[in-house]
Image (cartoon, rainbow, N blue to C red; front, side, top):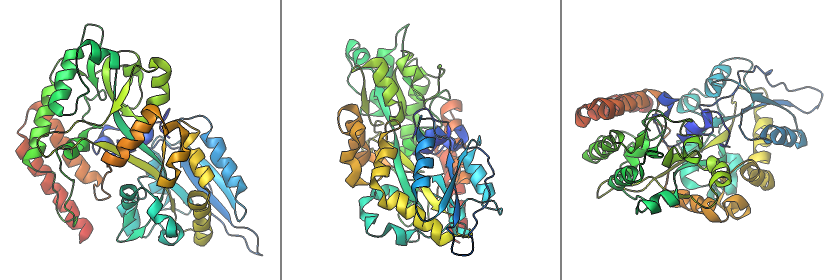
Length: 433
């Protein structure tokens, strides 16, 4: 859940934005802000007693989440489940470190599912069997992100997404329409800028973190080839998209400093910007402040082959493959995230604005059943893009550096992204080797 989260979940979401890692992806927090608690490792008791499982969550910003997940754990009849509500400043790192010790959790959530390194190291269990017939019910692009070599290693919990918020009255006053292309975004941002209100805000880094991979997708490109053997972002369409974004970045319409960052709605609701890139989790506060005076839209396209984009992602439940009660942990995850649809709806519906990970549950999530929430849900199903599991930290670092050099320093995009693609290809060779 993303609303009042830590930079953690939102980064994730920066779910779709790859440079996020360097910038801080996510809806329920930006970087995974989960505490570095050290719950005891799982223990299976002898004599027929129920096994004891340790389950980790990152700290959600929305009220009530902690109480709900602990209540659900207590309701599970076949094991004693101890929930660790992590307060770690970097939850993802805390989990990765814990998996190397005897104090690793049996069940844990992780941004966009476990990493490829975790999968290849045999740290996480194959969950394909517990998904079963429900596989076709999960959002396909999302479940694909949790899958490697035909096996599913995480169960998506709820969907978080990013989108463009715009102030209807500001665009109307400036006689502007909602931008659908990058060129139009720059035009509108400059047209609505006044002495009292800026044009477009996407973070205090000028959007270079959260929009990094979005610029690949809006140009009609993918991060990698369909066989995952080569980087495909290094193309003239990307050079053109980044050049257009630089034009916006350098213009008066770009707001580069605001009272909050992109993952919170402060800049938008405080009239610091007429348009802001944010998350679905921000919608309750936006509605409370602006009523009907706002709309939502996808990120604009770039070029003739470009596409409008809505980046999205999800935290997912994974099982420690080296725990003492692997089968019991898998059974619990199946119970909670496959069988208990009422709890899945509540997880998406009761703590802010989120979209269920399963399409059959969309109609039961009343906050996205009508109005801007419904429009957002429609956008993610039609235009959603999610980061590839092969987009490693090393690849992200190389790409983010290239983007920064082009946009901030005016370096040649072909030279910068060619170098970044070379590093990405080396990563692919390492992973596939």
